[in-house]
Image (cartoon, rainbow, N blue to C red; front, side, top):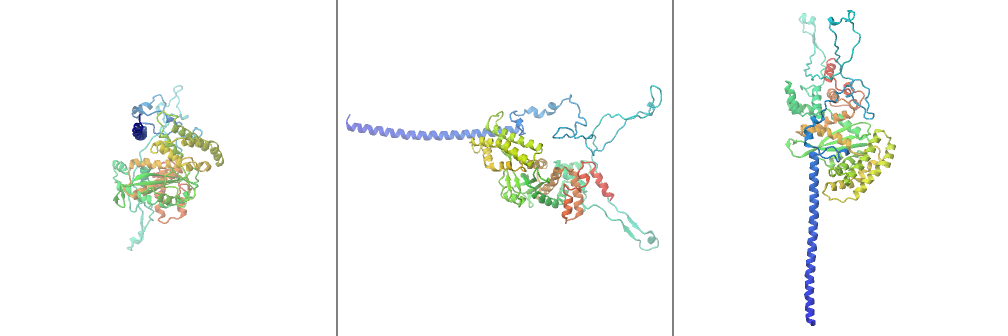
Length: 554
């Protein structure tokens, strides 16, 4: 082969090689693109599958986040409808008086009370032999009472009584002046009518207290209360009921300001928020969702307080407004609105756990999320045991360093090995745990701080349950009134007061004290005050009748 032929063959081979090389590069690029598309599709499929599983878990699965429910599978549809049949057992004996008494959580034993409730009125029914049967069948002599034999106890209910209270005062005149033709000397008794919550209004304090308790503690919206009164022949429209609630709630403002002052003195505050619907803002319809903010004193607080505040946003400016210059510790779920004040910020392990709990596939106990949840549960068990045994702050610190911290370090060791898709549920859980690490580990060295923000969540829950019934507030004034009444009710509950009795007391004395209340008066009405009347502390027992009777006899 000649030189020219070799050169020509070399050029042809070079050209073919270049074409093949370009084709190979294009194929490699196409292959990389296809791989990337497949990875994206896999992530998309994983994400959609995760959403389907999560939705099925929400619809059909166990709602509880307790560990014992991790792998029990979903509930059957039949189980939700056949609860009465499944739970029914004719062989189970009827509860006795002792069985329905409250037991101690620590010992599991009854507290020693012989009655279901100490202040419960007891009516005794004694069966006697007729006179003609009181004859001894042995000797024929007359039988005389010897003793009484106990038979049984039953709980009876008498429906509430509704009545009018008409106030009069006696008018006197001098008969001598009247007889002698002079102008009669007329003297009237002093007007001792209790100061009304609503000026010239029809509602007694007892009625407004009842409306507030029904709406905010029992979740009975005003339109249902309107129907209830109508069925009893009393026509109270819901507008009047709403007006009475708002006017009554206005009286609570000085007490709520004092509650804030006492809250700022506590070392730890727990905070949370929940959406609430308000239909009108400044008289105009709005679709914007408001927020009910909740701030409560910590579990180790000297004064147990829960404060609700309505605002039309969940911005940082609201958190700064509510927490002011507070310098203690604020524990939250990690929402970004918190943290700009002078206080220290603690996180919530319950929120971190919930995010990993939602990632656990049904029946899988070996996945990373399940192992993380198990470790968090072990740490929470140590915390619970410490509370039950009343550990001192120093004992809590030692326990957390020896037992809790190693478990949580293992949690983060597992998290460090994970690299999930950012938009997946696991990705969100991992991101939350990493971003919140300092706040989540804050409690380890602070015995006054709890492992979770569950106290605030438990305080939010009563409002959430009530909101499911009344759905919305018509105006911002209504939302503010809801916040004020919920503050009084939940603070009363935390201090073991009777809710109706405390509401009744406040609605009775606050109108009498007028607009300018002294600190001494306000402190005397605080839920921990020793000067509160007995009916604020006792379980409900004819409080309406008792109070009206006391008022009339003043």
